[in-house]
Length: 464
Ligand SMILES: Cc1cc2nc3c(=O)[nH]c(=O)nc-3n(C[C@H](O)[C@H](O)[C@H](O)COP(=O)(O)OP(=O)(O)OC[C@H]3O[C@@H](n4cnc5c(N)ncnc54)[C@H](O)[C@@H]3O)c2cc1C
Image (cartoon, rainbow, N blue to C red):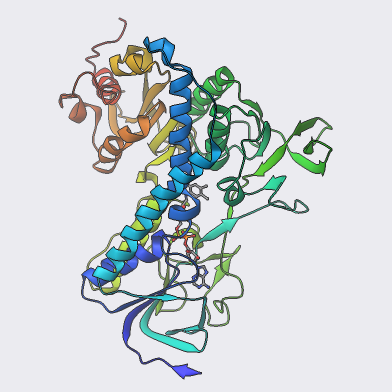
């Protein structure tokens, strides 16, 4: 076995969002970095997650616009989906960003090493016959789609999100197991492409991590779009039929479709990589870390989907940067995960930051709420989208609203608004702080502005 020299300050295992963000920040700080990746830098987000799904959702939006153009006085005809064209557009987007990422990594003099790595000591990762030694090791091996016991994915009729992104046709009908972000986004795409879609969700609402009011609005919109869903429904079994699959739910109800997409979550990639042998503590498959992403081994950190924090690309970026800065000797602060924005990019979109009403109740926090319907927002009416913006604030002793604790939005394009929401939440603003800021008209940002005006006691476009 060839011994690599201890040439690196940091050796990073896994080149997805968490790993590459750590590499970029560390290199920027003058660190010598090796980034080991067995597939393609960019990981799940770039190749099998955020980017390709959002490209599909954009194609879906164009399809809907072509179909609905008469609403806006434009004559056009919708002739259907050219799935090869959709994939070619999506792949071009991914490829362009992948090339950009590779060149950014190279420009920072990061050594990107192709191959499958294994942790062999607190300071060493082995790839093939070569050992890469670093003063610090960062584990960032990410996650892969999970299934349920006894539910086997065959890539043809029972598929994962990885398979769905490459599916060579628009299925006539789909059952989606799991009404979380991934399930809901694919439901939205396939419905726009013309498929019959039914979501099966075990919890009592779609997007179970979101505020109940947001879920209700999404469910209403999906019903209107003809997307079916079974809530509080437990999957029992699936069998192949002549025309596809038949799913049986607990209680005996059956559903038939051409394919079943399993979107029941993602599990960490931590097995058989030497982690436990080197002393890295694992809990339910996740690498255990403290609030600074330090594992039980002092020289080893872990970031991204591999640790039990929200499985989001931007969380991976944040954790990667935190680790690079900590190793680089800068003062770092633990991440407030409540303050990380979350978006489901379906039609309509669901976006939020901070806590839900249920979480506030669980934590014994008294709150004041205001909900501004999109029907009162000029830009949203122009776009013909429906939904609402809900703001939750702490209730001061005198009953007035204090710090904003949660912002929850539903409607087309509202994902872009949550960046303002995150500033409000993370800067611990109160409604009266925001109410004095003039929001541009006509924009959807006025949804937030109007809600803050109302909470501050001076509602503008609101019925008395
Ligand atoms: C369908 C879908 C849609 C999503 N949409 C969004 C979204 O819109 N917004 C958002 O924020 N998040 C989204 N996500 C989640 C996001 O993709 C993940 O949170 C993010 O990619 C996690 O980054 P990571 O670096 O932890 O792991 P990954 O991106 O999974 O990267 C891990 C990398 O490690 C490599 N690796 C693993 N083992 C080894 C080994 N032994 N040796 C070398 N390399 C190895 C893998 O090949 C991989 O490239 C989506 C996910 C999916 C599946």
